[in-house]
Structure formats: structure tokens, C-alpha cells
Image 1 (tube, rainbow, N blue to C red):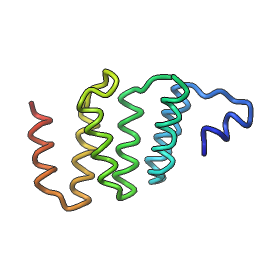
Image 2 (image 1 turned 60 degrees about the vertical axis):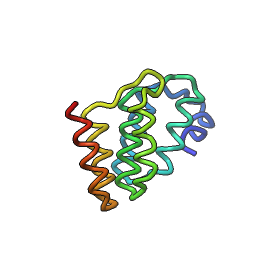
Image 3 (image 1 turned 30 degrees about the horizontal axis):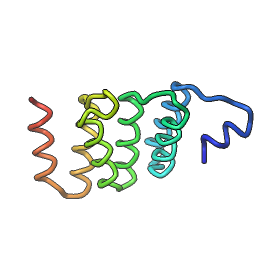
Image 4 (image 1 turned 90 degrees about the vertical axis):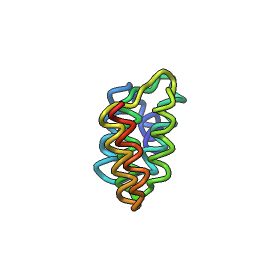
Length: 115
């Protein structure tokens, strides 16, 4: 995976490099890589940030993996390690529902976002 590749090259990634890689996964629709990086981020002990989880949610949404996107969003919105869902989190989760044709879920999230 990407994290092991960096370590193999003698590089020690920080939270910024992880978030940059996660954003690239979103752009490239590489949902599997995003999930691996999110897991590696936890293992590295760098701590999660909202931007990290949001990028992984968006990568899953763009990769047509709406179930994964919603599972990550639920973890975030249920106070995953002290993190809270923000406007981007809701937007990515709503987009995942939309992509899957889950209009009721999208409307539910939209209502929840306005609270």
C-alpha cells in the first residue's frame, strides 16, 4: 500500500502528507487506497482529523462505494475519536446517497445537517 511504500523509501509521513494522499485518492476515485491510508493513519498514531475522514468519505462516494462512505460518515457523526461531522462531511454523505439513488437517506442527512 501507499504508506508501506513511503516507509520502504525511508520517509516518515506526517498528517499533512496523509491528508494530501487522501485528497488525491478522492480525486482519483481510489476508495480502497483511501481506506488503507485512513487505517495506516490510525496505526501511525498521528490521530485522525475531520479532513482525513472527509476525504475518505468523498473517495468512497466517487468510487461508487456509498455503503463505505456512509459507514465512515456515521463513525464521524457519532463522534469518532472526538471528531464532528461538518458541512463537507454532510455534503459527501449526501452525494453518496444521491449516487446510490437513496433519496430518503439524502433527505434525512440534509435535515440532520440543518440542526
